Length: 299
Image (cartoon, rainbow, N blue to C red; front, top):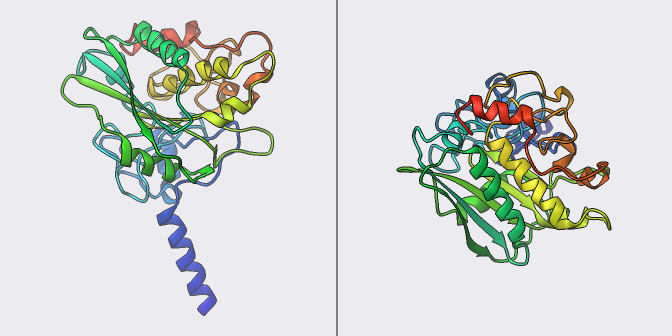
């Protein structure tokens, strides 16, 4: 009897204190569609806590294991822009509610973003988001060195709570980027996760994993440029992750990703296997993704 009670207490403790179980490299995120969130409500321990999301969740997207965000153990991470990844895609794509977009970037000491990657992200957002009052990227806070070497979703959200200073309000939508060292709980012996879109407005970028995935032919900067656009794509609702597809192009085996290897939304772009892609590493959306974004109110 005592061992049974202890095991139940342990299970409850794990449910309340952790995010989600580790994912494999090709599906590092959490469920994003309402149906998936309903199925996973018991393990995600956060369903319904995130304003407007209707459930916990947030990262990559729509078809299975990819995606993830929302709240930990029922505690919202912040204001109403913290639904699952892709849940506020139209806020970024259209000028209906928000005429301006600000990208806030925080980074752990020694893990600063590459300027070229930030410039490319701005370029891609300007090309696809209707923001008549402009898009601004602000490199904000240098965070002290962190002891964490393997990041859980709960850890990412905690660090964001401590340092994020901007949320969507007034006429301005906000996208938050957090650069950190170490690795992700979804890393495997085969591959590492390079980035994760873990709420409707937040992305984590694993600087060490990106640098260590580089090769003689594929540099760390090239990888970072692809990963940052890829993760932002999930927040914009790709693929099938908040905006409807105009024709089928979602990779059912890898969740919210494109079937085309020439698209930045191809699944391997956010894993260390990106350096093994044949040809040039993609860093832009293909015609199918662009069609989806335009149909949802983007450019």
